[in-house]
Amino acid sequence: MRVAILGSGAMGTVLGAYLTKNGCNVELIDNYQAHVEKLNSCGAHIVGTVDMVVPVKAILTEQMEGVYDVVFLFTKQLANDQVLPALLPHLDGNSTVCTLQNGVPEPFVAKYVGKERTVGGTVLWGATFLEPGVSELTQDITKSTHLFEIGEIDGTVTDRIKKVAEVLSHMGPTMVSEELMASRWSKLVNNACMSGMSAVCGCTFGEVLDNPKARACLSYIGREVKRCAEAEGYKLHPLLSMPEPPHCLDLKDQAQFDESMQMWLDAYDGLRPAKASMLQDLEKNRPTEVRMIDGYVCDVGDKHNIDTPFCDIVVDVVEKIGRGELPLSMSNLDQFPDELFTFKL
Image 1 (cartoon, helix red, strand yellow):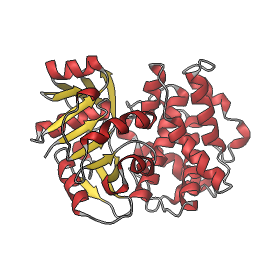
Image 2: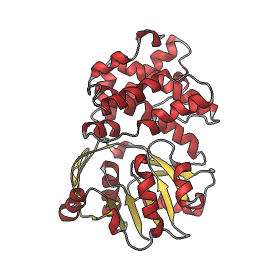
Image 3: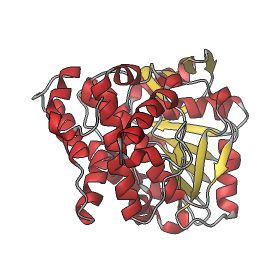
């Protein structure tokens, strides 16, 4: 079986290292030449909660040859218009593309490669790109009950999704879900909340947690995501340390708000050193996926006449940082007016 990881940044490098180490035939594909060269010459160096060097095979996007059986898509959604047409010649009727991108990318990917070749999933661990050839695994995956949750768009359990799960199991426990899109929205809580605020504040997850106003923003953003998910017909699943069900994100009273504030501390205790990929993009003066994450919540809110003021501000602030109009600083919390905070911090 030929396996490819298309987009071998932080997450792709870590996945590629584990798959290779545990006997999977995988190619790491990226357009960052210095990174590809370092991977081939020195191997994938994974640091953080582990320290290992794994010899891997890496190629540039234009060096793809032949047909892949399974492709894990880890590129930014911003790049889909470029990378998916380039991938098409390397797929056949039996190929499967599993998008592990942030947000809710499955419908867009399916438009390019066909619904019959598209599956998706959420990644339940974090990584940070440090330098060419080196990525940091930011949590202890040995303590995780599962590392991936994958599924078909329509929720059926097929032979191909089982095949994808078998490949991912080379890294760790993988769950096949019959409710992929609900899981996507559940993961979107984490992306929109913690990744959004890490980018807004220019800081690590731990620094977001330690600031009461920033942590309160997590809860208010979470309520907006939950309302939009339910409007679309999806019920949020427990994710990380969220209660079952994550009722505290309703924020109907002070008690729920207080519970949600504690939930974030519990959920992200092992991820405090992590930086959002959006923040990493801002630090490198690259475009971010904020429109595909918090902006997606705003779009769904508009569709259902649901107010999303916190997500609106996240999008506005991150884009202003990208244009150089605001700094990468905790001072950006001032962009959230006090009147939006209806509960005591």
